[in-house]
Length: 82
Image (cartoon, rainbow, N blue to C red; front, side, top):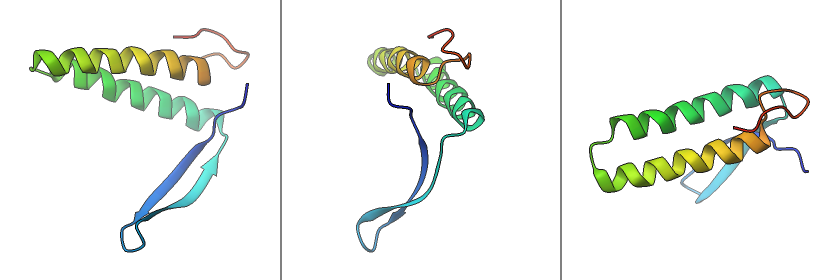
């Protein structure tokens, strides 16, 4: 499987483009990113009061858990997939 990368981009509204500023393959950075993204998704779901959006947020959380668990396993040797 192709290894994921993290990239930092910055919008250039004047040129209507996105500028790539940096890229990393750091496992530590990827694990921190995974934790932050999943925390945001869980908070969205927990704080949502709209029943329709709550269904959408729940589906998004499950999708992110599956994708990030596959791309960024918790254990370095492939470990668990969330």
